[in-house]
Length: 296
Ligand SMILES: C[S@@+](CC[C@H](N)C(=O)[O-])C[C@H]1O[C@@H](n2cnc3c(N)ncnc32)[C@H](O)[C@@H]1O
Image 1: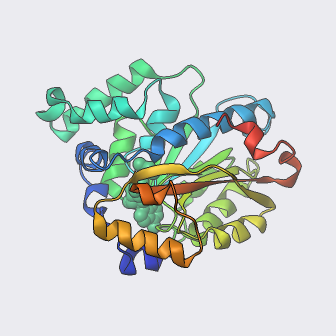
Image 2: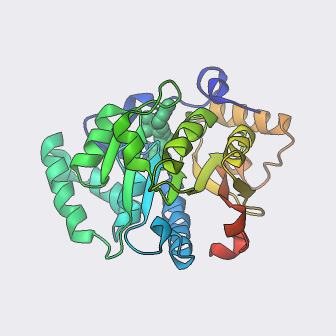
């Protein structure tokens, strides 16, 4: 099993850190697009279905009224926020950030153009999405472009949340993560859940997370259970994350998964990272099985 140290220091996983904190998202999309990075597409569909389910449940904001509040951890430039709030697809974003038309724009001009683009495509019942990520430039871009309603460049692995973050995430309906477990551990979940449940607006959110199959989710689900959340892993279905960058990454991952007794046939052995999906809900809200909430 792997923890964040293994993922970062010992693994054969390619290090993309340089593109995580640039002035705008063009390089992020162009680089990850060349490896068919697609987990945000699965996130868009699954998280949207969960937002609907939670609304139908009458749980959003404690009353079923008002905007659903989502906190997206490892939000980067606001990728998940852009996809949850707007009538757009991940392919639209790849096309947009790779387009020649936008190549000549400065980052500031691109943020303005994005703000207009997002306004034009805003969904009627768009959720409010608050982002958290260590990458200061990326978070700032997400807020300036309007993808994120608010953003916090904080490292909850190492520090307590600021007062502003505490207030902003109180009363969250749904906590989401794509491509981030391993970078963040149970420490980040614990600190966020403490903020979300405190104060007069406080409530227990649903926690919806995609995690690569070689990353253990055990510590996180244990931490979530101390807040009364029951974690289910979606059985019988995994989600493609991206293609391997090359033989080195592929061999390393196949060997690690074999060591964990995980069958990679038809999945990683076809050249792709695969992720599991986990949903954590309070026991009394877990009566409908996870499989029945999603259209897979
Ligand atoms: C692979 S990207 C995923 C971004 C986005 N969720 C997506 O799917 O497109 C991983 C992100 O985790 C962020 N990250 C790394 N360490 C973190 C930490 N300790 N707390 C919050 N975010 C972190 C990186 O800055 C980066 O934006």
